[in-house]
Image (cartoon, rainbow, N blue to C red; front, side):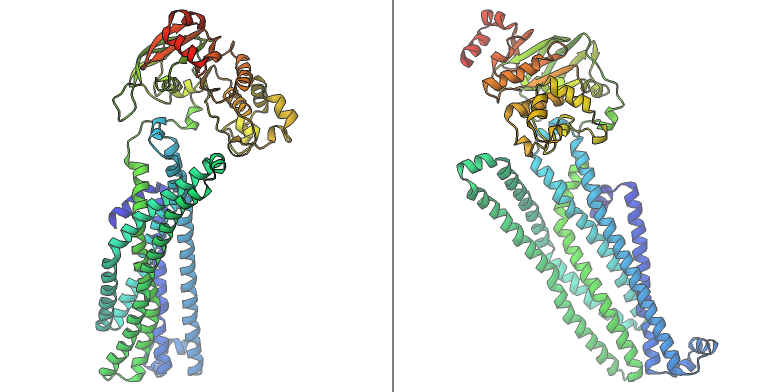
Length: 600
C-alpha cells in the first residue's frame, strides 16, 4: 500500500498533492461529523424511553429550564429537531466531501493523461522506433482512467476507514467489550476474504491490461487498412480477431465485479446476526428494556453506517490490486526509463533561427540504432553548399533515410559532427537549426481538418498567417486547385488522412506545409516514390519552383527525379561509393549505372 501511495504521489504535481492533503483533511472532518450524527441518537433514544432523564441529567435539566419549556413532549420534539439538523448537516458535509473527491479524481484524468502525452511527445525520435503507437495511445486514453481509479479507491479506503474508525471508537466508549467483539469479528472476516482473493484479483488486472492492449491494436489495424480489408473481404477475420480479447476483457471485468460485491451479502448476514447477538447479550445480563433499547438502536444505526464503509474498504482494496498493473506501466513510462534531453515547442521559440549561408558539413558521421552494433552509416564525410540540390541514392537499407534523419536532428550520430557554416550542431542550438528546416516525407500525414490547418500544421488558429498559407500553396502548385475546385476553398476539410484528395494533391499540400515557415533547407525523403510518373512530374515542377532559393536534400527512389541535382551521392553498404552529376555517374560509376538500368 505504501509503494502504491508513493507512485500515485509521484504522478501528481506539487499543487495537486497539496489539494490531495486538503481533501484528506476534509474527509477527516466529514468522518467526525458523521460520527457526531450517530452519537446524537443515543441521548434522544434514551429520552424517548426514559423522559425522567430531563430531571436526572444536569445538562438536559439546565437546557430545559433556561429555554423555558413547559412540557416534556415539547422538549423531546426540540431535541428530536436538533438531532435531525445534526444528521442533515452531517449528510450535507458528506455530500460536499464526495463532490470534492469526484472533482479531484476526474480532473486527474485530464492532468495525468496530458502529462503522459507530453512525456511521450517530448521523447527523442528514436524512442518511437521501438514503440507501438497504438499502445501509447491506449495508455493515454484508457490506462490513465484505470490509474485515476486507483486514486479513487485509495481515497475511498481512507474516507471509509476514517468513518469506520471513529464509529468504532464511539462504540467502544459506549460499550467496550461488545464493540471490540464486533470489530474483531467484522475485521477478521474481511481480512480473511481479502487474503483469499488478492492474488486472483492481481492476475485478473494483468490479464485485463493485456486484453485491452490487444483490443486497441486490432481496432487500429482494421481501420488503418480499411481499403485492403474491404477489397479482400477480410471483415470477418478482423471481427474474429477482435472477439477473442473483447470476450476475455468482458469475462475478466465480470469476475472482478463479482469478487468485489459478493462479500457485501456475506457480511450483511454477519451484521444482522451481530445485532441479534447484541440483543441476546444485553438480555443475558438482565439489562432492562429501557436501558437496552438506546444501545440496540445505537448499534443498529452504527451498523447501518459502518457496513457500507467496510464494504467500500474491501471493494477499494480489491480494485487497487486490479489496477496495480496499469499503475506500474504508467509509472514506468513517465519516470523509470532514461531518455535524452528534449526541447519543448515553447522553448524552441526562444532560439533564433540558425540559417545556412555557406555550407553544411557532415564530418566522420557513424550511426547504429540503440541495442544493435550494426553500422547503418559508416564514417560519412560530405559537404553541401548553400542553395544547391543534392541527392542520395542506393538500394533499400543502405542508410539514405538515416542520413536525412540525422540532418533533421531526429537522430543523433553515434560519432562525428554536423557543422552549419562552421558551427557544430549540439543539443543547445539544435532547435535553432530545426527552425530552418522543411521536411517532405513519402507519406504525407494529413489531419482530418481544413486545407489551411493542414498547411499551417500545428499553428494555433489565432497565429495562422493566411498570406503564408497561400504563398506556400502557390509555390507548391496547389493554390488554383484549392480555390477553383474545392467547395469551401482553404476551409475545405480533407477527410481522415486526406482520403478526399489524390496522392499528388496530398503530396503538394505536404510541400506547402514544409514551405509555410519559409525554411532555408528542404529535405525530401522519397517524396514522390509512391506517385505515378505524370503526378510525380507535377510535384517536381512544384519543387523546381523553389530549387534556386533553397538548399534541397533529396532521398531518391527513382533516378529520373534527380537528373538536375548539382551532386548525387551513391550509397552502398552504409558508405558513399560515388558522387557527381547524373551524366558523370552514368559514365564512371558501375553501381549507379546498374541502378539506372534496373529502373529503366
